Length: 250
Image (tube, rainbow, N blue to C red; front, side, top):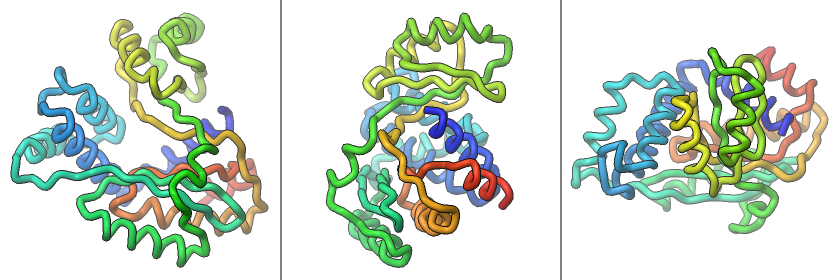
């Protein structure tokens, strides 16, 4: 998990820019819309999925007024429903890519994703082509603050987590995606509010490329991440120290 944690921290650091924040806000609004429409309630206490969306809104510093407006709009029966879909493919160099999208127009999303893969010299594949290369996990990020490292980690393992580690003042808690609710409940029992809570796909094996080839693959990944219908891009490109240093220098 160390390579994954390194990549996650770099992504969070890179995500501070205004454009990244705008994309994050858009993704959260879509999460809220899906949560309200499918969860059947605009009340977080009765809608676990909405609670998670609101939690993630806090994680990206989305203003409370924006969150409330999004919930109100999603509660309007005239607001168009959105649905989630996935795509799988390969970036140059054989890097496996798995996309999670939320859209109100599947035809548009398919067209845009196919065009991005083509322009980036990648290959859009059929469903099932790369899914098996990833393990579905839930990831919670918790700020340490006054938490005792050893005691908190033991509590989380006891609460169903597979792993918990502290780095740069933040705990990264990992568990099987089916244990999301159990771990969330444990955090609530401890009166700990996580900074973020996500369901992710962790690559089983990494693809290592030289710096130039890795940058070409990342150019395609970045283009996919910038598309308005794409929520998250999972991939198995190995985050080498050389590549990490190059990204941090940008």
